[in-house]
Length: 319
Image 1 (cartoon, rainbow, N blue to C red):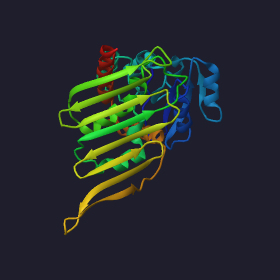
Image 2 (cartoon, rainbow, N blue to C red; image 1 turned 90 degrees about the vertical axis):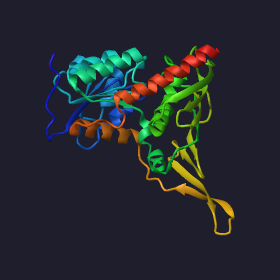
Image 3 (cartoon, helix red, strand yellow; image 1 turned 135 degrees about the vertical axis):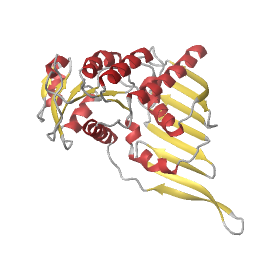
Image 4 (cartoon, rainbow, N blue to C red; image 1 turned 180 degrees about the vertical axis):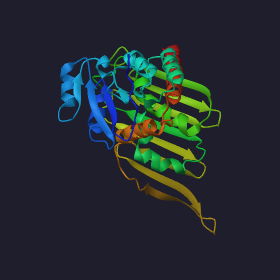
């Protein structure tokens, strides 16, 4: 089967496979992203494929094989359990892939995906969108050896992703960010979680100690009436607060004057807003064109998945 076509100065030809809740947003953004031609929306539900293709230059398809010879890169946004079966033949044929998070259902599948990408020398990116949130990217230069990190990620009960626990669906966003920020090995994990509205874990809390000395406390829930996405970094002499939803950040620090009087000063940090998913897709497109690593590589996606599995194991032991 011949999939590949050389990427020249023309627009990068991209298809989205799986245009459900998340994939349709990939298609929406790609249809107007500079330097990109959205050539196809693919879904086993023909109606969904047609709906996402409407008003764009894309052709609606119901199977991945229809993309043969027509694409330079593919977004894989199918259910997690199908990531490997969709991504593997594409990667094997040398087609760069951005796969939605989590990278796979388990580490064995993630490792197989990574091995295929390495063998073919093909770009594999993972959709950890919060890495591209303007509030976070603005605040991170001020983060300096945090000693404690507090994370809350709460949302309403979804109609999707109920085939995986809340740790893999929701908390994994923050696990990826924390692993990137700390770049330190995990020393210990304590975790609890319970199913409430499904037969999977719907709410979970984890406390992770890192070799750097930092302690991280994370709460993830998909049974909340409020939509909360916040992370706080506490470090020597200051702390930072990031609100992913509002794209706001604050920096507060202890200042001591010449007379030894101390005061807490600070406030909001100026954040230039933007859609994180658009930034993620632009990064992937540039990685493909420039033949460089994406900001969130397959290896980093695997790293977050490995930590999510460890947390889930602790929860299972607890239950």
